[in-house]
Length: 342
Length: 191
Image 1: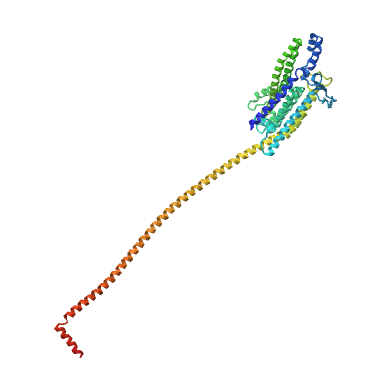
Image 2: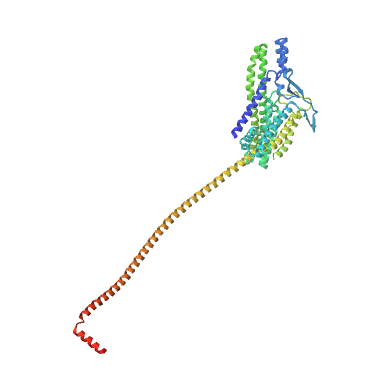
């Protein structure tokens, strides 16, 4: 039964990959770099040299990766896309702080991915509950999600978090699914990767940091202080004092490097993947320029498209991998600080 | 418990965008890859907390519960199977013991039957012997009685014969002069 669920889960992943990759490829030559392409075509009539100059100055990679106040939706018009300006709200002042809560592109993506994730998992949860009420094993989609959650819970989170770690399971799973759905949504055409924004990943890492420290406080009690102030018990005071003096900053630093690495890893992986894809797509236009927009340029575009497809497949894997790593390392860090009691 | 963790963490996390915003105050900076964004941080936090509660309540909870219920059912089934097997083994042993007992019983019955038959045979033989003996005894007694009777008869016959013979003898001796004299004497007394 378990293996069957694993197979379904694998099928789901493959389906997601297919869904994500195929429209991405279809859209490539037109949608993403459309401002450039249309400009280039417009300029092509005037002369190849001027077009090249105009194109060279246009950056279409960074605006795609960075946050903005617009979202792009599919549109059966010029460039097959339409930019929608998001509303701008007046910043909120909380004491000395100014908080601009206007929905940006990444906020919208984050909410959308969270909504999709919640929907998928709640549906699976209902399926599992129904199965339980009917006294039969969970089947189909809910079974696949159940197998995934069960695997993460029993084989990844619980062994790493340590004894009586059940209460940290929902936290780790939430981090996993939130990151996973944000990562996957970023691979869908017209969408953006919220987890490719350092603000999102650092918030997640901050939450992980708090969770780790609170787990330490709960497990160690007063001895939690020892995770900040290094104080070896089995050494004479004369040795202990300088060691403590040297090691305490290291201990404190190591507390912050862990979540910092979490934030940077996720952000860098997601951003790098997108930059790689966009750079490969940019090669279409570089070839077009080099071949003077002749029909051969269309033929040459096959190579970047093929490469992009491969990278996109890799990106789907990375989307799962990074979500998994974030969750795994959070579990490991929670386990570490809880273990340091013994 | 994790809810407590989160409420505590909310305070700390709120500090993070504060630091970020401190730099951002004033003119809107040109966004870069590493530009911090307080609004987005706030939204991330909200989304995470919302997801945490929704998923814990409606997804992880029921799924874990379903799995646990199934595990319990499985454990129960295994336990039941073990109990059933034990009961079956007990039953089998019981039956075997019963069969063994029945076989013993049968053996006993056969042995008893044989003994009874033996005894019966012996007693019948005894009876026959006794009857035979009785018959013999009776025959012997009859023979004895007959002999006594026969002897008595013989004796009587012999007496008769003897008397007859004696009569003959007497009759023959009647001419004797002495006898005549005797009779005449006798007759003389009568007169």
